[in-house]
Image (cartoon, rainbow, N blue to C red; front, side, top):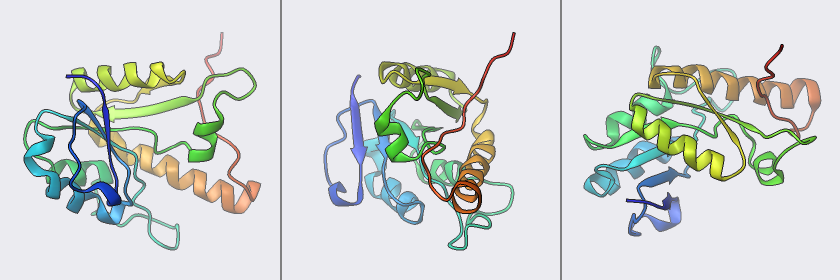
Length: 170
């Protein structure tokens, strides 16, 4: 298998030809969209880029101790592998590409090593730098980073023309 498919609200019935499926829907619709596709997601890698934040941007709409990615994984068929990725990059920053000659970092989390390796290769093919944060339980930390960025955009910068990344010292 190879290739990328995108699931959005407008293409619920489309064929999922790629081995990687990007879940491009609001978090509130994510589990239902995954359930709707059911067996078509069997054996696929689902990239969850959602941030399940509350409307007041002060917390999350997921159960305590869980993450949006973990809730999406519960809705996915056995054999599908959810990888959290891209949720810490604003779309316009991602579209703009490298800043000041530095590749953008894409933090990922997932339980399946092969799925994370495939997602990492996809990220690298886009000229970005994958940063593996560990198991899918780390998705909650990545969603907290997304919430942090929304807070920075609202209260410090008053814009969203930034990204967070890793600088390796020494």
